[in-house]
Image (cartoon, rainbow, N blue to C red; front, top):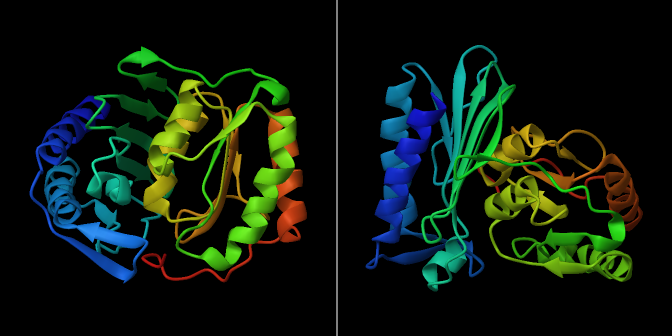
Length: 269
């Protein structure tokens, strides 16, 4: 199954990389955009993936809503994670495909169609980058790189997110802001970065990559509990328990130990 999913995602990546003429519209704000390539690729992925598993449900960023099945299989898909990058020709983009089994992560695949990099994982079997086994790093806090973002869809939260960055920056090596959560979390699974924090992500942003993080030996959580896969959620991820403790303490201090927004509908941003 993993190999067949990788084949479908590879084909979708070729389609995205070849999409030079596309329209761009916003989804309620100038920061939250969608291109015709997003919509076309989601349509392609829905058709091909659900045919792999008859009867499976499909959750996609661009309007395909289904509940995550407690019994059976559910796809959670972002056809282009990093749409702003894509729209401007910045080659940091992820096609993100997660397959859940009985409500739990089972397979995750993240592909950058411009670099060709393919991250994949299957629960209980392992995680791979371009077919080679991958594992999170073992770097101590002072050598860690944090990847983050400052909540461009909810800029009222940005001051406290900046507080997290400002607090951590003197204690770690450096900070990156790449613009695609799926790729950044996959880079944590790879061992290229070591810490990740974003205050509000939707399931299609992180479901596949967090499957890779877990299979590669990393850990993740929310602020006041587990990461949600049925709605928006904070995402904290780290290479080690010790570094997660520091990250969680820093984020909790900035946000009073609570998720600072009500859970919205699954397709809310």
